[in-house]
Structure formats: structure tokens, C-alpha cells
Length: 308
Image (cartoon, rainbow, N blue to C red; front, side, top):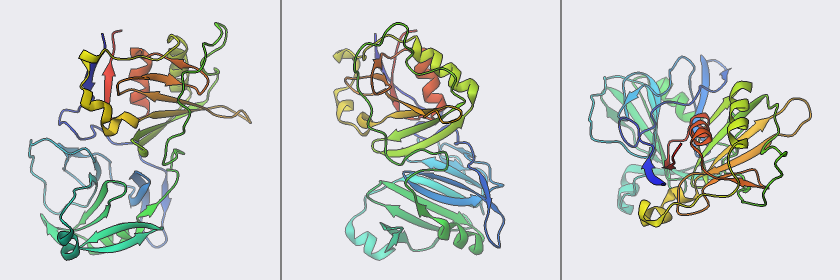
């Protein structure tokens, strides 16, 4: 029986671990940096920072946190004087509040609002709010030069550092049953790029090597044809209209030489059409490939659990 479950962390609603650090680069006149981001918004932070060093959405060191889904009320204390970038959900305020506390700005053609500076536990804080993407980027630092450097680096991209498009690839269809001798995806992939989407926006991404690609190829190949449909009494009807309904994982399996990559899309939450698709044929939910694909793509959303 299918049962709705939330992929929650120990502190519900926050991302339990951080994405792999993006490639380090040198910026003119400064220390090496790494790019981090979500929803097509990227920021360059010091390469020395370790990502995801927080507890229940509260930073415990100089770090980057992804708190788009909110946090629980475990209320740990925040050490004073930290330098932090937080990707938070967008909080709708009355129009008058924005006129008093923010300034409209445009970043790479995208409209945003920049908050007036304030002080939070010994750190200067400025936020960029992106209402169309439902994301707020908060930057804190006791160092004004570092604060200015990070704020100046904010940019809008159509593809992240791992190669994931900001919007998902539209290839999800059940199609026809494949021949018994035809693999779901070809063997021999040298790696994979996992892209996790929240609605129509890229949330997290990851890049893994040959071993992970071989495991996923094998587990998908063993799954039966078709899509899964949870019984009505095992899923909240409100979930059908939630923001997770359109959420997808898209994994791009990469091959050596001139062989093209092969995308696989997985739909794990909703009231119908649950499974994975290569664009020509679909497979049902099965625990081996679901567990791996969520881990490989750093998916932190809701999902429907299944029997072994």
C-alpha cells in the first residue's frame, strides 16, 4: 500500500545537508570563492566556508543555509558575529511595509527588492527578495567589505554550475512498454547530474560519477512498466494541489565521447502518474530507485513511500 510521507529532516522543513560545493574560482583582488544558489539565483561566497553548518535552520558557523521550506521551533541560539548566506522562503508583507523597508532593484533583468541594512547578533544584514521566485536571499557579515562583495555577486542564471537548467525538462510520459531486451537507459554512463525541482524552479543539484550512474541504471531497469497511483484513502487530497504536485527530479546520465546524455524524470508526489520516465516509457515507483534518485539529486521534498 502506498502511504504519503514527508521527507523531513530532524528539524522539519529545513534541508538536512548541503549541496556539494561548486567549483572554486578566483575573483579579481579577492580570496577564492564558490558559487551557491537555488531557483536560478546564485551567490559567490568564500571557498573556505563549509556549507549547511546549521541546526534547525539557524547558522552555527560561517556558512550557507537553504531554508526555503521554513523551520521548526527548536530555537537554537545563533553565535554572534557570523558571516552567512541564507536562502529563505518569501514572506508576503503588506505593500506599505515594502515601501518603508526595501528598495526596488533589478538583477540581470529580474525584479527584486533590497532591504534596508540592519544588525543581527553583531552582523550587518541585507536581504534580496524575489517575489516571482518565492525566494529571499539574506546576507549577514560583521565585515562590511565582505558583505558588499557577496551582495555584488548575486546573479541570475539559466543553468547552474552542475549543468542543471533552471526549469525542468518536459519529458515525463508513460509511453509504451519497452521490449524485454531493451534497457530503460543505456549502460556505460560515466556519471550523472541530478537536478531537483520545486515546482518549476531548480532547487538543488548534484554531480556524481560512474558508480552512482551504474547503480541507478540497474535499479531503473528492474522496475516494472507503467505509473503508480496512490489509493485515495492514503493521501491527503490537499496534496494534489500543492506546490509539490509539479515537482520533479531530472537526472541526466552522461556518456563518454560523442554519445548524448540521457535524461530521466521522476515524479514522486501527487495523486497520479507517479514513477520515472525516459520520455518514451515509464516505470512504477520502486524503493531501490526512489531511494537512490532522491539521494543523488538532493531532493528534500515530499514523496510517496512504497513497499520494498
